[in-house]
Amino acid sequence: QVQLVESGGGLAQAGGSLRLSCAASGITFRNYVMGWFRQAPGKEREFAAAINRSGGVSWYADSVKGRFTISRDNVKNMVYLQMNSLKPEDTAVYYCAASPGAGGSLVTEYRYWGQGTQVTVSS
Image (cartoon, rainbow, N blue to C red):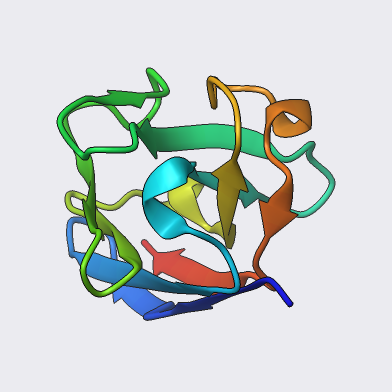
């Protein structure tokens, strides 16, 4: 069975930092593009960041570019999202996702999803 489990969410102050982790099992981790999406109340789930299979290339939504960094460890089967300079607008449930394909910015490109972890940024 495939399992993606996020952790590291919580409460941060505006301007602060959080680091999210996602532990993957049940898949050959290195064969998947990994991404992070987020969903705020009343809004659609939106792309935040993704990283290619080897970990050498990453890409970001404009809203988080320069503030967030995605990384992965293919030995530990982990993907991370370092979030710096947090803003109240970053408040959302953050989801880890795995794509067997190109793994772009669309929800439909990702096959497996974690349960989500809440990130709340206070002003």
